[in-house]
Length: 204
Image 1 (tube, rainbow, N blue to C red):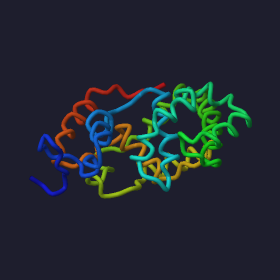
Image 2: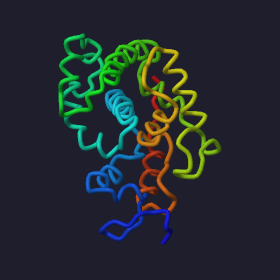
Image 3: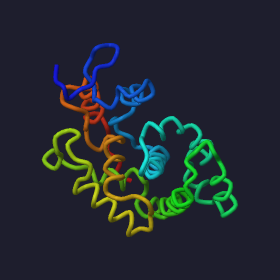
Image 4: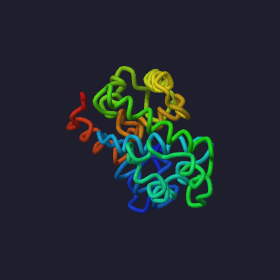
């Protein structure tokens, strides 16, 4: 059994980070790397990844339900209508990460997402247009940035999005299934490969 995979109670190999706690194991086994085409879920993950900057994903994952409550389940149209009073309220919400700049970025990015969707048809269509080919993909978990994540981050910035650099976007791409970054001997990798194979890439 390769040392590149962590060992959990069922004794099957997984990505090492999944052994950090039960919530991480569940997230690893049921969500991470499986392809997503829901605009709402993609927007949520972009927001949560921006909140993670400087923190651990485990911290954000444990607060995910609180974030969903605070940001109306990351409904793009609703968050885009948040005003200064909403931002001030959220800064006082101890159940989430009370970072004023990150909170402001979520509201800003919801407005930017509305403009993007109007132009592209969907956030999903835009995101999946940056899916790297197999030839452009590095071995699993060996890099934290890629040409595709750099390109997407640059374009998002050009379109007015905030707090989403190439590293943050790469983590988003890993988690939303734009590449399969599970280690080669991870027991979940074949399931992600199958899900990606069956996934219909959104065009609008």
